[in-house]
Image (cartoon, rainbow, N blue to C red):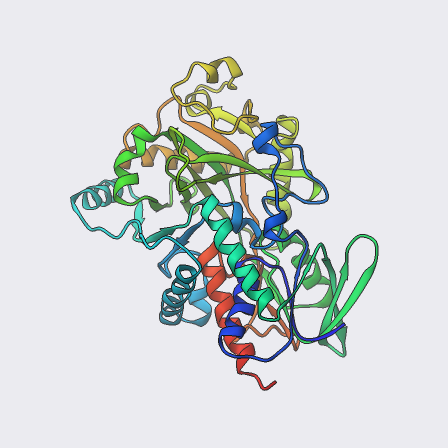
Length: 466
């Protein structure tokens, strides 16, 4: 097969690359390749089974059109301060302007017009004052919350728009490698498990998402694509009663707090806060189960969950941060017999594991029904665990009751975007004809920033002569 542009990965970065090319009037032939299924064919059986059955050949929550976006909480961060380091590559002003542009596209396809966290009242000032006293930084970030169930409809509308306007969508096809000729990328090799397909293209865009970060790192090493090891995030998903978080939820919806707790002073941050939300499980390759969180627009729980992530930067000779995080996850999964582990904060401080009977009589009831009560400290690295404990204690000064004995910690919460591809401001790698976008590139984190990177890529490709 021959085409003008081939895009690997139908997550937000890949989707918005194709979408922006169409909006710019490009006549180039675009092929968008996705390992998973079309959004209307994505189904997670856990709603019926009440437990993860480890779907094969891939997890429907993380894989398919829109990637994890369709089954996430669907929050769009509207500040360039949140969502990765893309502003360092192309400039903060350009990113902020493109966020506003991209946000309008989401609105066109049905996103809620209401924006959370834009008030500047006494409650926010009081929260900020407590954060400063606790040694934490409160990051201002307006949030447009699509909601898990609404996000699916929005991305389905985008999927149909792309198909109706000539973008060829190839589902169930996995990219196994790129095609190089004389150090120029000529296309990609695909497989559906039965047969292989070669696609030759003038421009190749890899937007494989967090799930594809490990694969992309191997491709970079094999073909000498310039990259460097970056930060890897290891952490937990914390769950408390809504009553504890009600002030923050009302004033900010999502509190983005950053700290550098002693003694190690690693960067620790909150991420993906879900008021009235549900803790969820995602499965990656090699049967790795990781924890995440969802928040619906209409269906609510009695709890709020959020991630606390500890960033690790490794120096020579170690250069496998993704493998490090995977090992942490594998060890945690081993202790939970393949399931997510959950432990009460008070039990961690007391040096004991949590038992299921203790969870059953707690004020905070787990919203992940098949999480296994146990001891996450047996698998979590000491440095990460101590950073998380000290950060939770600082959070308690901002949100009284956050460090209550019954607060739940789920593990592992891991973010695989540590491999950073070296590119210029037009997203050109050192291999001619090859571009890397989104979370797998190491430059973005989250739906909006990945979408913005796709928009900028689409403009670059559309501006080239047909």
